[in-house]
Length: 251
Image (cartoon, rainbow, N blue to C red):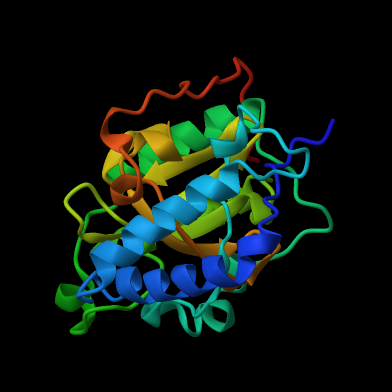
């Protein structure tokens, strides 16, 4: 069975959709400072809504929101320009992407909670004297993206597929810049977050997902622009992560 999310075909409106998405990406990634941002956001919502009705089979699939959808190629976040050179594991590819399942889910949930409690939160400005610097946590701690990096590293070491672990930049519920780790499971995309121990489905977070590592090639980045302010995700109801009673052997 093919468990990939439905691919949207928007041929008649493809040029319009790309124009709106491109301008919206610039507005949102720039902090929604553009005076045209509200209009662009409304148009994009309309375009995204149209896209969800135009799947390959011509019907809407109930599980299409299970996974975040890549919209278009974008540049990497400022702090991640040389990420692949400094941390090759962060951009690793696999022969065939394998979704996380079984005992791996239990291990990921446990690891998320463990790292959140062991690593202290400290801003890049306080630690490095600059506003943005992606790195593994030091003895002093780390920023949100540093939490995401060490979780990704530990999960890869435990045997999880690197292409099922994607770093994403978001706006949190207060519209502050934030970074999380997206874990692609057989049940959909779930989020490992330093702000909470519970691993939630991306629609449950209330976050606005801006961009993430490209699922096909984590060396690249893709625009997402979904969730949070793009939808009414404060009250969304989605299934909780179903975990296994098995435990992953991390030795």
